[in-house]
Length: 442
Ligand SMILES: Cc1cc2nc3c(=O)[nH]c(=O)nc-3n(C[C@H](O)[C@H](O)[C@H](O)COP(=O)(O)OP(=O)(O)OC[C@H]3O[C@@H](n4cnc5c(N)ncnc54)[C@H](O)[C@@H]3O)c2cc1C
Ligand code: SF4
Image 1: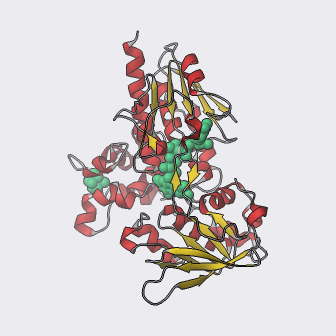
Image 2 (image 1 turned 120 degrees about the vertical axis):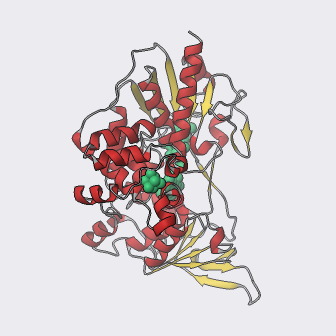
Protein backbone atom coordinates (compact mmCIF):
# COMPACT_ATOMS: atom_id res chain seq x y z
CA UNK A 1 0.00 0.00 0.00
CA UNK A 2 1.18 3.59 -0.64
CA UNK A 3 2.44 5.04 2.57
CA UNK A 4 -0.39 7.27 3.71
CA UNK A 5 2.01 9.74 5.32
CA UNK A 6 3.71 10.31 1.93
CA UNK A 7 0.55 11.63 0.33
CA UNK A 8 -1.40 13.12 3.19
CA UNK A 9 -1.58 16.94 3.09
CA UNK A 10 -2.05 19.52 5.84
CA UNK A 11 -5.66 19.97 4.70
CA UNK A 12 -6.49 16.36 5.45
CA UNK A 13 -7.09 15.27 9.00
CA UNK A 14 -8.31 12.36 11.11
CA UNK A 15 -10.85 12.51 13.90
CA UNK A 16 -13.41 14.81 12.24
CA UNK A 17 -16.19 12.92 14.03
CA UNK A 18 -16.48 11.57 17.56
CA UNK A 19 -16.19 7.81 18.18
CA UNK A 20 -19.92 7.26 18.67
CA UNK A 21 -20.82 8.97 15.37
CA UNK A 22 -18.11 7.02 13.54
CA UNK A 23 -19.35 3.75 15.03
CA UNK A 24 -22.88 4.52 13.90
CA UNK A 25 -21.76 5.66 10.42
CA UNK A 26 -19.86 2.42 9.83
CA UNK A 27 -22.41 0.07 11.40
CA UNK A 28 -24.38 -2.43 9.33
CA UNK A 29 -26.10 -0.47 6.57
CA UNK A 30 -29.14 -2.75 6.38
CA UNK A 31 -30.79 -3.99 9.55
CA UNK A 32 -31.40 -7.74 9.67
CA UNK A 33 -34.96 -9.12 9.58
CA UNK A 34 -36.50 -10.37 12.79
CA UNK A 35 -37.94 -13.92 12.80
CA UNK A 36 -41.46 -12.53 12.38
CA UNK A 37 -40.46 -10.19 9.55
CA UNK A 38 -38.63 -13.04 7.81
CA UNK A 39 -41.68 -15.31 8.01
CA UNK A 40 -43.96 -12.55 6.64
CA UNK A 41 -41.50 -11.81 3.82
CA UNK A 42 -41.10 -15.52 3.01
CA UNK A 43 -44.88 -15.74 2.69
CA UNK A 44 -44.74 -13.21 -0.16
CA UNK A 45 -42.90 -15.73 -2.37
CA UNK A 46 -45.03 -17.47 -5.03
CA UNK A 47 -42.58 -20.44 -5.18
CA UNK A 48 -42.61 -20.06 -8.94
CA UNK A 49 -42.09 -23.06 -11.15
CA UNK A 50 -39.06 -22.31 -13.39
CA UNK A 51 -38.32 -19.46 -10.98
CA UNK A 52 -36.64 -16.57 -12.81
CA UNK A 53 -34.77 -15.57 -9.64
CA UNK A 54 -32.75 -18.83 -9.76
CA UNK A 55 -31.77 -18.13 -13.34
CA UNK A 56 -30.67 -14.60 -12.37
CA UNK A 57 -28.44 -15.81 -9.51
CA UNK A 58 -24.91 -16.39 -10.84
CA UNK A 59 -24.48 -19.28 -8.36
CA UNK A 60 -27.91 -20.76 -9.17
CA UNK A 61 -29.16 -20.85 -5.55
CA UNK A 62 -32.54 -22.61 -5.34
CA UNK A 63 -34.22 -19.47 -4.03
CA UNK A 64 -37.83 -20.69 -3.73
CA UNK A 65 -36.62 -23.78 -1.80
CA UNK A 66 -34.62 -21.79 0.71
CA UNK A 67 -37.48 -19.33 1.15
CA UNK A 68 -39.97 -22.21 1.66
CA UNK A 69 -37.74 -23.56 4.43
CA UNK A 70 -37.76 -20.16 6.14
CA UNK A 71 -41.56 -20.18 5.94
CA UNK A 72 -41.44 -23.66 7.58
CA UNK A 73 -39.15 -22.31 10.30
CA UNK A 74 -36.36 -24.63 9.10
CA UNK A 75 -33.57 -22.06 9.08
CA UNK A 76 -30.77 -24.63 9.17
CA UNK A 77 -32.18 -26.41 6.10
CA UNK A 78 -32.62 -23.07 4.39
CA UNK A 79 -28.99 -22.12 5.01
CA UNK A 80 -27.81 -25.51 3.73
CA UNK A 81 -29.72 -24.96 0.48
CA UNK A 82 -28.03 -21.59 0.06
CA UNK A 83 -24.52 -22.62 1.06
CA UNK A 84 -24.47 -25.80 -0.99
CA UNK A 85 -24.71 -23.56 -4.09
CA UNK A 86 -22.73 -20.62 -2.72
CA UNK A 87 -20.46 -21.09 0.28
CA UNK A 88 -20.18 -17.28 0.50
CA UNK A 89 -23.99 -17.05 0.80
CA UNK A 90 -23.61 -14.97 3.98
CA UNK A 91 -21.45 -12.23 2.48
CA UNK A 92 -23.24 -12.36 -0.88
CA UNK A 93 -26.50 -11.69 1.00
CA UNK A 94 -24.88 -8.44 2.12
CA UNK A 95 -22.83 -7.34 -0.91
CA UNK A 96 -24.66 -8.68 -3.98
CA UNK A 97 -26.31 -6.02 -6.14
CA UNK A 98 -29.58 -7.98 -5.82
CA UNK A 99 -31.38 -5.10 -7.56
CA UNK A 100 -29.78 -6.17 -10.85
CA UNK A 101 -29.74 -9.94 -10.12
CA UNK A 102 -32.32 -12.11 -8.32
CA UNK A 103 -34.59 -9.33 -7.06
CA UNK A 104 -34.77 -7.69 -10.47
CA UNK A 105 -35.97 -11.00 -11.91
CA UNK A 106 -38.51 -11.67 -9.14
CA UNK A 107 -42.06 -11.76 -10.52
CA UNK A 108 -43.16 -9.55 -7.63
CA UNK A 109 -40.96 -6.80 -9.12
CA UNK A 110 -43.00 -6.80 -12.29
CA UNK A 111 -46.36 -7.02 -10.54
CA UNK A 112 -45.96 -4.65 -7.60
CA UNK A 113 -42.52 -3.14 -8.08
CA UNK A 114 -41.62 -4.69 -4.73
CA UNK A 115 -39.59 -7.88 -5.11
CA UNK A 116 -39.35 -10.50 -2.41
CA UNK A 117 -36.37 -9.34 -0.32
CA UNK A 118 -34.27 -12.33 -1.29
CA UNK A 119 -30.99 -10.85 -0.01
CA UNK A 120 -32.35 -10.15 3.46
CA UNK A 121 -33.97 -13.60 3.66
CA UNK A 122 -30.71 -15.22 2.59
CA UNK A 123 -28.92 -13.30 5.29
CA UNK A 124 -31.52 -14.35 7.88
CA UNK A 125 -30.94 -18.05 7.19
CA UNK A 126 -27.13 -17.95 6.88
CA UNK A 127 -26.74 -15.78 10.00
CA UNK A 128 -28.78 -18.34 11.96
CA UNK A 129 -26.48 -21.17 10.88
CA UNK A 130 -23.28 -19.24 11.51
CA UNK A 131 -24.51 -18.20 14.96
CA UNK A 132 -25.27 -21.82 15.82
CA UNK A 133 -21.62 -22.80 15.21
CA UNK A 134 -22.75 -25.95 13.38
CA UNK A 135 -20.77 -27.20 10.41
CA UNK A 136 -23.22 -28.49 7.79
CA UNK A 137 -20.68 -29.91 5.33
CA UNK A 138 -18.59 -33.05 5.63
CA UNK A 139 -15.62 -34.07 3.56
CA UNK A 140 -15.83 -37.08 1.29
CA UNK A 141 -13.23 -39.78 2.06
CA UNK A 142 -9.65 -38.61 1.30
CA UNK A 143 -8.77 -39.01 -2.35
CA UNK A 144 -5.03 -38.64 -1.78
CA UNK A 145 -5.00 -35.78 -4.29
CA UNK A 146 -3.51 -32.42 -3.38
CA UNK A 147 -4.52 -29.17 -5.10
CA UNK A 148 -2.83 -25.76 -4.85
CA UNK A 149 -5.06 -22.68 -4.78
CA UNK A 150 -3.39 -19.29 -5.22
CA UNK A 151 -5.31 -16.44 -3.58
CA UNK A 152 -7.64 -16.68 -0.57
CA UNK A 153 -10.34 -14.43 -2.03
CA UNK A 154 -13.90 -15.55 -2.83
CA UNK A 155 -12.82 -17.39 -6.00
CA UNK A 156 -9.93 -19.27 -4.38
CA UNK A 157 -11.83 -20.14 -1.20
CA UNK A 158 -14.96 -21.27 -3.05
CA UNK A 159 -12.74 -23.55 -5.11
CA UNK A 160 -10.88 -24.79 -2.01
CA UNK A 161 -14.12 -25.50 -0.13
CA UNK A 162 -15.68 -27.50 -2.95
CA UNK A 163 -12.45 -29.48 -3.46
CA UNK A 164 -12.34 -30.21 0.28
CA UNK A 165 -15.97 -31.41 0.15
CA UNK A 166 -14.97 -33.77 -2.65
CA UNK A 167 -12.18 -35.26 -0.50
CA UNK A 168 -9.14 -33.49 -1.93
CA UNK A 169 -6.47 -31.87 0.21
CA UNK A 170 -5.98 -28.17 -0.52
CA UNK A 171 -3.16 -25.75 0.21
CA UNK A 172 -3.99 -22.08 -0.34
CA UNK A 173 -1.07 -19.75 -1.05
CA UNK A 174 -2.01 -16.20 -0.05
CA UNK A 175 0.20 -13.13 -0.37
CA UNK A 176 -1.44 -11.17 2.41
CA UNK A 177 -1.66 -11.59 6.16
CA UNK A 178 -5.43 -12.20 6.14
CA UNK A 179 -7.70 -14.30 3.95
CA UNK A 180 -11.01 -13.24 2.38
CA UNK A 181 -9.59 -11.16 -0.49
CA UNK A 182 -11.65 -8.02 -1.16
CA UNK A 183 -14.29 -9.14 1.37
CA UNK A 184 -11.62 -8.26 3.93
CA UNK A 185 -9.74 -5.48 2.13
CA UNK A 186 -12.15 -3.88 -0.34
CA UNK A 187 -15.91 -4.13 0.17
CA UNK A 188 -17.38 -1.12 2.00
CA UNK A 189 -17.10 -1.39 5.79
CA UNK A 190 -20.85 -0.77 6.29
CA UNK A 191 -21.74 -3.70 4.01
CA UNK A 192 -19.51 -6.24 5.81
CA UNK A 193 -19.03 -4.59 9.21
CA UNK A 194 -16.77 -5.69 12.05
CA UNK A 195 -15.00 -9.00 11.58
CA UNK A 196 -17.69 -10.61 9.40
CA UNK A 197 -15.23 -11.52 6.63
CA UNK A 198 -12.96 -13.37 9.08
CA UNK A 199 -15.86 -15.17 10.78
CA UNK A 200 -17.11 -16.35 7.40
CA UNK A 201 -13.60 -17.48 6.51
CA UNK A 202 -13.41 -19.51 9.74
CA UNK A 203 -16.77 -21.07 8.91
CA UNK A 204 -15.56 -22.02 5.42
CA UNK A 205 -12.34 -23.54 6.77
CA UNK A 206 -14.37 -25.46 9.36
CA UNK A 207 -14.89 -28.25 6.84
CA UNK A 208 -11.22 -29.26 7.28
CA UNK A 209 -8.69 -30.32 4.68
CA UNK A 210 -7.77 -26.73 3.73
CA UNK A 211 -4.53 -25.13 4.86
CA UNK A 212 -3.79 -21.45 4.15
CA UNK A 213 -0.15 -20.36 3.92
CA UNK A 214 -0.05 -16.58 4.37
CA UNK A 215 2.71 -14.31 3.07
CA UNK A 216 3.28 -16.65 0.11
CA UNK A 217 3.02 -14.72 -3.15
CA UNK A 218 3.09 -16.35 -6.55
CA UNK A 219 5.86 -14.74 -8.59
CA UNK A 220 7.73 -13.64 -5.46
CA UNK A 221 7.95 -16.65 -3.10
CA UNK A 222 6.71 -19.44 -5.33
CA UNK A 223 6.56 -20.20 -9.05
CA UNK A 224 3.74 -21.71 -11.06
CA UNK A 225 6.11 -24.40 -12.28
CA UNK A 226 6.95 -25.43 -8.69
CA UNK A 227 3.24 -25.54 -7.78
CA UNK A 228 2.48 -27.66 -10.80
CA UNK A 229 5.34 -30.03 -9.98
CA UNK A 230 4.23 -30.54 -6.39
CA UNK A 231 0.41 -30.63 -6.71
CA UNK A 232 -2.09 -32.54 -8.81
CA UNK A 233 -3.76 -29.35 -10.03
CA UNK A 234 -3.55 -25.57 -9.49
CA UNK A 235 -6.30 -22.94 -9.29
CA UNK A 236 -5.41 -19.26 -9.73
CA UNK A 237 -7.72 -16.81 -7.96
CA UNK A 238 -5.43 -13.78 -8.06
CA UNK A 239 -8.01 -11.00 -8.36
CA UNK A 240 -7.04 -7.54 -9.55
CA UNK A 241 -3.80 -6.24 -8.14
CA UNK A 242 -3.12 -3.15 -10.28
CA UNK A 243 -4.92 0.14 -10.76
CA UNK A 244 -5.51 1.97 -14.01
CA UNK A 245 -3.33 5.08 -14.31
CA UNK A 246 -4.94 8.42 -15.06
CA UNK A 247 -1.69 10.22 -15.93
CA UNK A 248 -2.87 13.64 -14.84
CA UNK A 249 -0.17 16.23 -14.50
CA UNK A 250 1.32 17.40 -12.26
CA UNK A 251 1.61 14.23 -10.20
CA UNK A 252 2.42 13.47 -7.46
CA UNK A 253 0.62 16.05 -5.37
CA UNK A 254 -0.10 15.54 -1.72
CA UNK A 255 -3.78 14.80 -1.15
CA UNK A 256 -4.19 12.53 -4.21
CA UNK A 257 -4.91 8.87 -3.40
CA UNK A 258 -5.88 5.69 -5.13
CA UNK A 259 -9.48 5.05 -3.96
CA UNK A 260 -9.07 1.27 -3.54
CA UNK A 261 -6.03 1.84 -1.30
CA UNK A 262 -7.96 4.44 0.70
CA UNK A 263 -10.77 1.92 1.23
CA UNK A 264 -8.28 -0.80 2.16
CA UNK A 265 -6.69 1.42 4.77
CA UNK A 266 -10.07 2.36 6.12
CA UNK A 267 -11.04 -1.32 6.40
CA UNK A 268 -7.85 -2.20 8.24
CA UNK A 269 -7.54 0.78 10.64
CA UNK A 270 -9.23 2.39 13.58
CA UNK A 271 -11.60 4.78 11.72
CA UNK A 272 -10.82 7.65 14.11
CA UNK A 273 -7.21 7.54 12.86
CA UNK A 274 -8.04 7.66 9.13
CA UNK A 275 -7.44 11.10 7.66
CA UNK A 276 -9.96 12.57 5.23
CA UNK A 277 -10.33 15.92 3.48
CA UNK A 278 -13.02 18.49 4.12
CA UNK A 279 -13.85 18.70 0.41
CA UNK A 280 -13.30 15.35 -1.34
CA UNK A 281 -13.48 14.79 -5.08
CA UNK A 282 -13.73 11.22 -6.36
CA UNK A 283 -12.98 10.51 -10.02
CA UNK A 284 -14.66 7.43 -11.47
CA UNK A 285 -18.04 5.85 -12.13
CA UNK A 286 -17.97 2.38 -10.62
CA UNK A 287 -18.78 0.91 -7.24
CA UNK A 288 -15.29 1.72 -5.98
CA UNK A 289 -15.99 5.41 -6.66
CA UNK A 290 -19.31 5.22 -4.83
CA UNK A 291 -17.84 3.26 -1.91
CA UNK A 292 -14.91 5.67 -1.56
CA UNK A 293 -17.23 8.68 -1.66
CA UNK A 294 -19.70 7.18 0.83
CA UNK A 295 -16.94 6.27 3.25
CA UNK A 296 -15.22 9.68 2.95
CA UNK A 297 -18.59 11.23 3.86
CA UNK A 298 -19.04 8.83 6.77
CA UNK A 299 -15.56 9.77 8.04
CA UNK A 300 -16.73 13.39 8.25
CA UNK A 301 -15.89 15.06 4.92
CA UNK A 302 -18.24 18.04 4.52
CA UNK A 303 -18.42 18.09 0.70
CA UNK A 304 -18.06 14.92 -1.38
CA UNK A 305 -18.39 14.94 -5.16
CA UNK A 306 -18.09 12.16 -7.72
CA UNK A 307 -17.00 13.30 -11.18
CA UNK A 308 -17.60 10.89 -14.06
CA UNK A 309 -16.48 11.33 -17.64
CA UNK A 310 -19.69 10.10 -19.28
CA UNK A 311 -23.47 10.21 -18.63
CA UNK A 312 -25.04 8.79 -15.47
CA UNK A 313 -26.56 5.91 -17.43
CA UNK A 314 -23.06 4.77 -18.41
CA UNK A 315 -21.80 4.50 -14.83
CA UNK A 316 -21.09 0.92 -13.84
CA UNK A 317 -22.33 1.68 -10.32
CA UNK A 318 -25.96 0.56 -10.22
CA UNK A 319 -28.84 3.06 -10.07
CA UNK A 320 -29.51 1.83 -6.54
CA UNK A 321 -25.92 2.63 -5.45
CA UNK A 322 -26.09 6.04 -7.15
CA UNK A 323 -29.36 6.91 -5.40
CA UNK A 324 -27.91 5.74 -2.10
CA UNK A 325 -24.93 8.06 -2.64
CA UNK A 326 -27.17 11.00 -3.53
CA UNK A 327 -29.40 10.52 -0.50
CA UNK A 328 -26.22 10.39 1.60
CA UNK A 329 -25.46 13.94 0.43
CA UNK A 330 -22.96 13.12 -2.31
CA UNK A 331 -23.01 15.17 -5.54
CA UNK A 332 -22.57 13.23 -8.78
CA UNK A 333 -21.33 15.26 -11.75
CA UNK A 334 -21.59 13.50 -15.13
CA UNK A 335 -19.68 14.47 -18.27
CA UNK A 336 -16.53 15.56 -16.43
CA UNK A 337 -13.28 14.42 -18.04
CA UNK A 338 -10.31 15.39 -15.87
CA UNK A 339 -7.42 17.02 -17.72
CA UNK A 340 -5.12 18.19 -14.91
CA UNK A 341 -4.68 18.30 -11.18
CA UNK A 342 -4.53 21.75 -9.63
CA UNK A 343 -2.03 22.31 -6.86
CA UNK A 344 -0.37 24.83 -4.65
CA UNK A 345 3.00 24.20 -3.02
CA UNK A 346 2.85 20.48 -3.86
CA UNK A 347 -0.61 20.06 -2.31
CA UNK A 348 -3.71 19.35 -4.40
CA UNK A 349 -6.33 22.12 -4.53
CA UNK A 350 -8.65 20.72 -7.19
CA UNK A 351 -9.08 19.17 -10.61
CA UNK A 352 -9.48 20.82 -13.99
CA UNK A 353 -12.08 19.23 -16.27
CA UNK A 354 -12.28 19.28 -20.07
CA UNK A 355 -13.90 22.21 -21.79
CA UNK A 356 -17.40 21.13 -22.89
CA UNK A 357 -18.28 24.50 -24.42
CA UNK A 358 -18.26 26.80 -21.40
CA UNK A 359 -14.48 26.78 -20.87
CA UNK A 360 -12.34 24.41 -18.75
CA UNK A 361 -14.12 23.62 -15.50
CA UNK A 362 -12.13 23.74 -12.25
CA UNK A 363 -13.52 21.87 -9.26
CA UNK A 364 -11.91 22.62 -5.90
CA UNK A 365 -10.89 19.78 -3.56
CA UNK A 366 -8.45 19.16 -0.76
CA UNK A 367 -8.50 15.40 -1.31
CA UNK A 368 -8.78 13.62 -4.67
CA UNK A 369 -9.56 9.90 -4.81
CA UNK A 370 -8.86 8.13 -8.10
CA UNK A 371 -11.28 5.29 -8.79
CA UNK A 372 -10.79 4.73 -12.50
CA UNK A 373 -10.55 0.95 -12.42
CA UNK A 374 -8.64 -2.04 -11.12
CA UNK A 375 -6.72 -4.32 -13.45
CA UNK A 376 -5.31 -7.82 -13.37
CA UNK A 377 -1.55 -7.60 -12.87
CA UNK A 378 0.19 -10.39 -14.82
CA UNK A 379 3.49 -9.81 -12.97
CA UNK A 380 2.84 -12.88 -10.79
CA UNK A 381 2.89 -14.99 -13.97
CA UNK A 382 6.12 -13.62 -15.44
CA UNK A 383 7.51 -17.08 -16.15
CA UNK A 384 8.41 -18.70 -19.42
CA UNK A 385 5.55 -21.16 -18.99
CA UNK A 386 2.57 -18.91 -18.11
CA UNK A 387 -1.09 -19.29 -19.08
CA UNK A 388 -2.32 -17.35 -22.10
CA UNK A 389 -3.92 -13.96 -21.45
CA UNK A 390 -6.84 -12.46 -23.34
CA UNK A 391 -7.70 -8.75 -23.04
CA UNK A 392 -5.31 -8.49 -20.11
CA UNK A 393 -6.79 -11.34 -18.04
CA UNK A 394 -6.13 -15.07 -17.84
CA UNK A 395 -7.95 -16.81 -20.70
CA UNK A 396 -10.16 -19.70 -19.53
CA UNK A 397 -12.87 -21.98 -20.93
CA UNK A 398 -16.35 -22.35 -19.35
CA UNK A 399 -14.92 -24.63 -16.63
CA UNK A 400 -12.06 -22.26 -15.79
CA UNK A 401 -9.40 -24.33 -17.59
CA UNK A 402 -6.42 -22.21 -18.71
CA UNK A 403 -4.17 -22.82 -21.72
CA UNK A 404 -1.84 -24.84 -19.44
CA UNK A 405 -2.42 -28.44 -18.50
CA UNK A 406 -3.71 -28.93 -14.88
CA UNK A 407 -4.06 -25.18 -14.27
CA UNK A 408 -7.43 -23.50 -13.73
CA UNK A 409 -8.31 -19.88 -12.94
CA UNK A 410 -11.36 -17.82 -11.99
CA UNK A 411 -12.70 -14.67 -10.37
CA UNK A 412 -11.51 -11.17 -11.20
CA UNK A 413 -8.25 -12.38 -12.81
CA UNK A 414 -10.42 -13.84 -15.62
CA UNK A 415 -13.09 -12.13 -17.73
CA UNK A 416 -16.47 -11.77 -16.04
CA UNK A 417 -18.77 -9.64 -13.93
CA UNK A 418 -16.20 -8.60 -11.24
CA UNK A 419 -18.65 -9.38 -8.46
CA UNK A 420 -18.15 -11.54 -5.38
CA UNK A 421 -20.92 -13.91 -6.46
CA UNK A 422 -19.37 -14.37 -9.92
CA UNK A 423 -15.98 -15.17 -8.36
CA UNK A 424 -17.60 -17.76 -6.09
CA UNK A 425 -19.29 -19.44 -9.04
CA UNK A 426 -16.01 -19.52 -11.00
CA UNK A 427 -14.23 -21.15 -8.06
CA UNK A 428 -17.00 -23.71 -7.57
CA UNK A 429 -17.19 -24.68 -11.26
CA UNK A 430 -13.40 -24.98 -11.50
CA UNK A 431 -13.35 -27.26 -8.43
CA UNK A 432 -15.94 -29.54 -10.03
CA UNK A 433 -13.92 -29.61 -13.27
CA UNK A 434 -10.68 -30.31 -11.36
CA UNK A 435 -12.42 -33.15 -9.51
CA UNK A 436 -13.63 -34.64 -12.78
CA UNK A 437 -10.18 -34.36 -14.31
CA UNK A 438 -8.51 -35.96 -11.28
CA UNK A 439 -11.17 -38.71 -11.05
CA UNK A 440 -10.65 -39.51 -14.73
CA UNK A 441 -6.97 -40.08 -14.06
CA UNK A 442 -7.68 -42.83 -11.51
C1 LIG B 1 -13.68 -1.27 -3.47
C2 LIG B 1 -14.41 -2.47 -3.98
C3 LIG B 1 -15.74 -2.69 -3.58
C4 LIG B 1 -16.43 -3.78 -4.05
N1 LIG B 1 -17.71 -3.96 -3.65
C5 LIG B 1 -18.41 -5.02 -4.11
C6 LIG B 1 -19.76 -5.22 -3.71
O1 LIG B 1 -20.33 -4.43 -2.94
N2 LIG B 1 -20.41 -6.31 -4.19
C7 LIG B 1 -19.81 -7.22 -5.03
O2 LIG B 1 -20.44 -8.22 -5.42
N3 LIG B 1 -18.53 -7.05 -5.43
C8 LIG B 1 -17.83 -5.97 -4.99
N4 LIG B 1 -16.53 -5.79 -5.41
C9 LIG B 1 -15.92 -6.79 -6.32
C10 LIG B 1 -15.54 -8.06 -5.54
O3 LIG B 1 -14.93 -7.70 -4.32
C11 LIG B 1 -14.61 -8.93 -6.39
O4 LIG B 1 -15.26 -9.19 -7.62
C12 LIG B 1 -14.24 -10.25 -5.71
O5 LIG B 1 -13.60 -10.03 -4.47
C13 LIG B 1 -13.32 -11.08 -6.63
O6 LIG B 1 -12.87 -12.19 -5.94
P1 LIG B 1 -11.46 -12.85 -6.33
O7 LIG B 1 -11.29 -14.01 -5.42
O8 LIG B 1 -11.38 -13.06 -7.79
O9 LIG B 1 -10.37 -11.71 -6.02
P2 LIG B 1 -9.93 -10.98 -4.65
O10 LIG B 1 -11.08 -10.80 -3.73
O11 LIG B 1 -9.19 -9.80 -5.09
O12 LIG B 1 -8.92 -12.03 -4.01
C14 LIG B 1 -7.68 -12.33 -4.60
C15 LIG B 1 -6.75 -12.86 -3.53
O13 LIG B 1 -5.53 -13.28 -4.15
C16 LIG B 1 -4.43 -12.80 -3.40
N5 LIG B 1 -3.31 -12.67 -4.34
C17 LIG B 1 -3.20 -11.81 -5.36
N6 LIG B 1 -2.02 -11.99 -6.02
C18 LIG B 1 -1.41 -13.02 -5.38
C19 LIG B 1 -0.16 -13.68 -5.59
N7 LIG B 1 0.67 -13.33 -6.56
N8 LIG B 1 0.16 -14.72 -4.77
C20 LIG B 1 -0.70 -15.11 -3.76
N9 LIG B 1 -1.86 -14.48 -3.51
C21 LIG B 1 -2.22 -13.46 -4.31
C22 LIG B 1 -4.94 -11.47 -2.86
O14 LIG B 1 -4.17 -11.05 -1.75
C23 LIG B 1 -6.37 -11.80 -2.50
O15 LIG B 1 -6.48 -12.35 -1.21
C24 LIG B 1 -15.81 -4.70 -4.94
C25 LIG B 1 -14.48 -4.48 -5.35
C26 LIG B 1 -13.80 -3.37 -4.87
C27 LIG B 1 -12.39 -3.13 -5.33
S1 SF4 C 1 -39.31 -15.01 -8.62
FE1 SF4 C 1 -39.84 -14.01 -6.63
S2 SF4 C 1 -41.83 -14.92 -6.13
FE2 SF4 C 1 -40.95 -16.26 -7.72
S3 SF4 C 1 -39.81 -17.88 -6.60
FE3 SF4 C 1 -38.35 -16.21 -6.98
S4 SF4 C 1 -38.46 -14.95 -5.11
FE4 SF4 C 1 -40.31 -16.22 -5.11
